[in-house]
Length: 231
Image 1 (cartoon, rainbow, N blue to C red):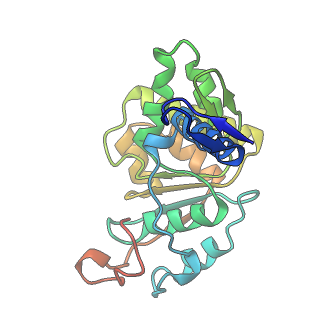
Image 2: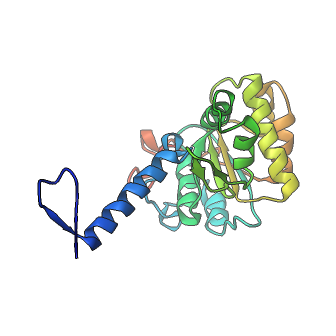
């Protein structure tokens, strides 16, 4: 039995199966618009961690990341620009289906709680600690596994530092793993950059630290550009 659809011309009949399909598409699009992370996600390139080119300097981190278990592992990967940090993190997140976000994006997401009637800042902090958000205007499952890219690539404000510290503290206290953080800086230099050791102390306690010092910048003839991505 067909259904009559407004706007399709007088008397036009639409099969019920097509009608239901269109409703599912509209609902899917609506949920996508409600997703708090959509505009902030780093797009993955589909590269598998197992396919990445190994060198003397990156073999240790690649071997470990191939075995990354989001229920038990956290990692801090640092090294100069162009050494594959972001590529490694996105490949792992693709494999375990976790979001990839820049550090500054997390601060922007949490700041939505200042001027939103349906969300608070603490709601958005808890989102990154596994608590789902479901309101009239927003839907987002709680986040467990995740990657934070390029921490402190820009000067971090006091609010950004407090927000990230709160997220890390709550994840650690709840025993939530599956975190990968990338940076151009070692933990010591990161503490100097931020002007506080609050974040670095927590990262040191949570994460296995990997260095890509010595790896060549693939942008100027290091790693094969067909096998890596910006990092």
